[in-house]
Image (cartoon, rainbow, N blue to C red; front, top):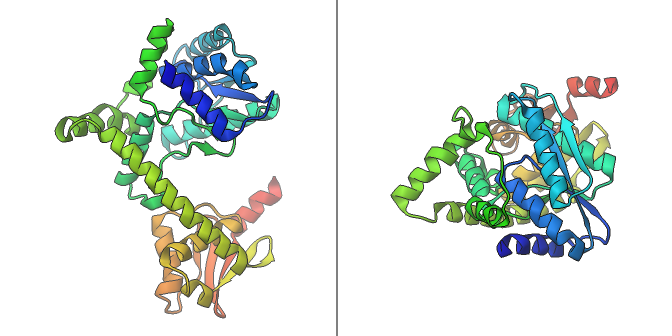
Length: 330
């Protein structure tokens, strides 16, 4: 219990929260988010901030509205205000997990705008970080994907990444609070559930305890290194990019060739995104690097909403016509 409350205080200190600012806990009713809601309610007065909650009803299970209302009641009971319920419709893009995540985060953004909150607090734990790291390994994500979840990412904050799920449940039992167990957390049609229920326990059994902690620590180390490389690449990009217009930017080949591969690849990724393209995947980045490292007169590449072409000693990125048309409609 003391560790849980300390984690919230330490987050507030690192963040430098402003007097009177409002933070909303993303509350599902599960043990992790309920523990965070309870700790924030206790610590908020001493920190000089206000604590509220947002509950997202994904409408993916029978009686989901009842679960959302029960979670809202719990948030009010522990002293959080305002408490709001966001009902969303989950799409299909990216599969069920990704589609639900997109709908959920859109609801978070709306709740921040509507309440003027300074941010959303998420109940992700060290166990979640280990699962994310392991999923990144299996997908060949590279350093950017192996750095796990950030303690702070824009308006999203994760104060509990240093604590285990078991410790949070113990704190709730000590506080006399009960939580809701989401049936989806036992559904092994979801990849993350397979990792949680089968893969990590197997590794702990065969390799000894501490695997989850080691994976989470490795993610933290990857994050530190990756953020340093990202900053170096951003500095190079800002100094080297030529902006022709909002939909056309370029980098000189010679300047890219002077950079270490880790910096050059990040700069090319940034070039694609600078003209409105999405973040290129691994295979797409290998194609993009071919324009730099294996140049033999290749034609322009279409990737992630942008066209990439080597011409006159520069690599040019143009926003795709499809993205331009979409922007014109909106």
